[in-house]
Length: 201
Image (cartoon, rainbow, N blue to C red; front, side):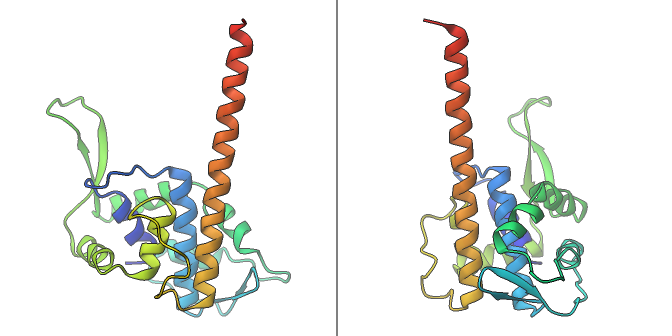
């Protein structure tokens, strides 16, 4: 399993009290992929740019797509641009992949057969590994989960994030999620103002 898949499974835990937005999660998943590519030495971070190395062979299909989608001409892509581009509908892609692999199952809430449907992790070795990483407070997984509002606040520079490139990626993911929230709030205010205009005095 990859950090992105572990993160997705953690956010789908039925015991989680915090619902994660699709956009926030997609940005964090793109960040998780980038961190795994850094760890695999498939890319390096220079300043705010992603510098690809050789094209690695990835066992995971989505990670293979991420590696194949890297910009390989200078000037290389900025981390923030990668997150927005790669993150487009990425949470839906991970949900589909995990359902296909039998890691997620659809369940109906309540006793009625037509109740609302939700997706929950299945008790598999992969889910247990993700839970182990989470319970051990594995720094990268904990930091990315914190960015999307799970597990409480965690500073980007807490002990454990001892890799400068990884710390940079987590910080940029945090900024992107904050930017997305600002856009949501601005739209909400604009929509409310528009509704009041039509409603009149």
